[in-house]
Amino acid sequence: MQSMKITINGSNGRMGQAIAAAADEEGVEVVGRCDLGGDLKAEARDADVIVDFSFHETTEAVIETAKEMGKRLVIGTTGHTDKRRTDLRKRAGEIPTVWAGNYSIGVNLLFFLTRRAASILDETYDAEVVELHHRLKKDAPSGTAADLYEIILKERGLGFEALRHGRSGVIGERSTREVGVHALRGGDVIGDHTVLFAGPGERIELTHRASNRRIYSTGALRAARWIMDRTAGVYDMQDVLGFRS
Image 1 (cartoon, rainbow, N blue to C red):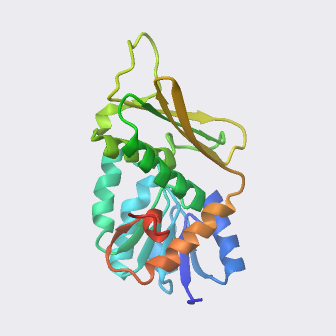
Image 2: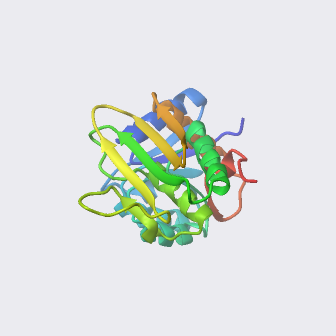
């Protein structure tokens, strides 16, 4: 297995700590650790890949540092607006980057199945995305939920104006040209995601439930290894896992 050195940005967070623990077990060398206010450039000096699970307001600076230093990049930070994420992905495309809202293999299979379902089921099947996370999560909806509704919007030829973030009041009948997204928070839930297609006389539910954060950290390290041999561009875990058709 190829030797690899990484710097973890957001190293004190839940994911940063999980990645550091997984790296030790999988023979990946963590040569730098950085958090808010730290010197990422100094910490990334000896790294092959910067693995970023920090705060959405610092993503631009992380990308610019990686570009300046010629480092590869794995981004798992969430919380960006749809427009901001689109703009930042263009900048990240100047270097080899994996950017995903979720690094779990099972969740990425959920993405694949959601894409297939949305391409097969017409608009008579109403699409809704529901996610549940622990009470300490700061952003909503989750990055994974955002990936899921973006898949549905793309397959149905809809823009972000079709999203309905929860519903309240007398809003009238549901349009066939909308996608609902709902964020639930409570307890210590690591992450549950369900995509619902409700049609006439039947409904299809695709669900993934996480019970251990190790699934995300090992996936992020797999992405870091994969990006080592890639040219500039923004990839995601569908590319890493070979799910692209």
